[in-house]
Image 1 (cartoon, rainbow, N blue to C red):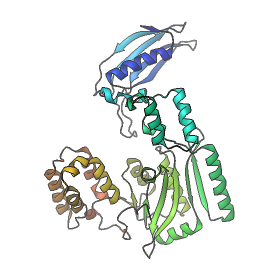
Image 2 (cartoon, rainbow, N blue to C red):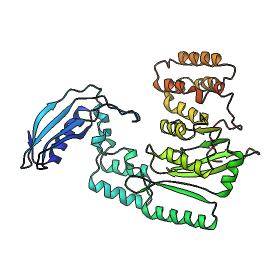
Image 3 (cartoon, rainbow, N blue to C red):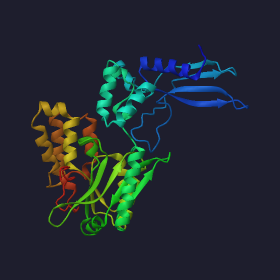
Image 4 (cartoon, rainbow, N blue to C red):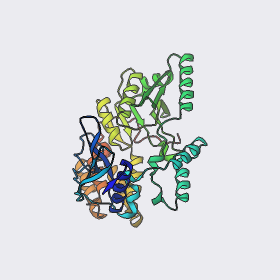
Length: 381
């Protein structure tokens, strides 16, 4: 087969990939001595070895690919084809969720841009596109594709001016911004003099909450919260995490540490996140990292909804395991009984949670100081 342009070749192979159930990407370009393109591969997205630092990698060294020879006249000719995959393929009803299938038309991009300027939420934008395309399978994006990753330039400038004015009014006010590789503002952090003084007195236990954008209006607001000697909630600082890439959390925690004169908390509570855990290990090496029990209970409801619906007693039995304090032996026995009683031996989420039990089970936390904070404080507070 031959094609007149790279786009035609890519679109044809991508259409085939959708019908079969896999995603493709461009790879392995070869050039002639005069700098013109002579060969190019389109490979399965699972091609290559998984990177050591890559989270939830799907790479399986799949060899499926199409090799094209490109003539000096620009004609793309299929030179070699390998169709066998070494991994499971997705079903037709899930094919529209594959990465190479999620390409927005220019008209859809313009519609999204206009709706964002008018303050329409991501969920409503996607709903409009689905209605206009006769179904979710015809909308070539997921929710995360339509999410706003960066603060709009006008808002970013206004926020920077506000933070600068606060610092000019009070020299103890502290703020910092992080730029991405393209020079765009990705993340903000700020705190004030009173918060810094409070942290010096009560910063032994800190909770870091990243769930506001999921619980409220998708605002990526992430406060550092503690409690004082009257058990009142106090704020040590806050962040806007617009781009949760791998460098965001180490930068944020290091910036927080700088603002607080290098004092590390004895205990820090967070939601369950591998990126946050890695960052805490790098920056708060002397701190005890604990997972928020409230979030864990919410995740139980989300990941084991069928089991909970069929067994109303499950959540109560689960909490008895969480708060078992007598001994590790007693905890392990109760956990095995729970898993066996509800047939959860093969449940991946429960296995992963069990592997992290030292961060949430009460029996492992006798030596940690909590200041009566057993979880991240309620958002309403």
